[in-house]
Image (tube, rainbow, N blue to C red; front, side):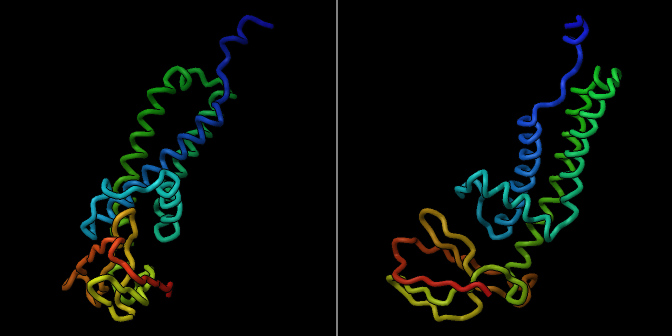
Amino acid sequence: MPENDNKTPRFGNIKDELFLISFIVLAGGLVSIDAYFQVFGIKFESLDFSAMYVIYKGMIMITNHPSLLIPYLLTVLLLVFELIAIKRRWNRFLLFRTPIAYLLLLAILLLIFPLARHAGQDQASRDMSRTTSSLPVITQLETKTETIPPMARYRLLLIDKDFIYIFDTTEDISTSPPIIDRIPKSDVIRFKTQIK
């Protein structure tokens, strides 16, 4: 084997590249979910979401906010550029590739933050409105102390390990933001929802 083969840069590890892309999507999902629940007055830290759910949200929010494709595509382009530089032996780039990669990743993260934050806040605003909400409608909710009549206004926001979060949607969120009701799961007798 020739002596200089040991010094030849190698192509990236596919596992590392997938991790990097997943990390960028995870960052977008975290910021978006945090912004979404902040609008409702719920702290993200108190919720127990899996990493897969956050990555899923990071991917699915592209459907309503295509601008989030920009940081994702920049990440892929960074990886492709690095592979081309390795294959063509662009020594100047290869000499500084680690600091360049870190600077570009920092720029991508700084780009993701405002885009994902806007996406989360926009989705929350749409879900608060009676006409645009995509959340399930509560068709039946009976607790030990009260029964909520079946109306198309009440929406299911979240079910966590201890509580069910519901709210009454509004016609105009700027004049009357919704009040979130947090009902202990142990108090619920009957609960039905319907997606409309």
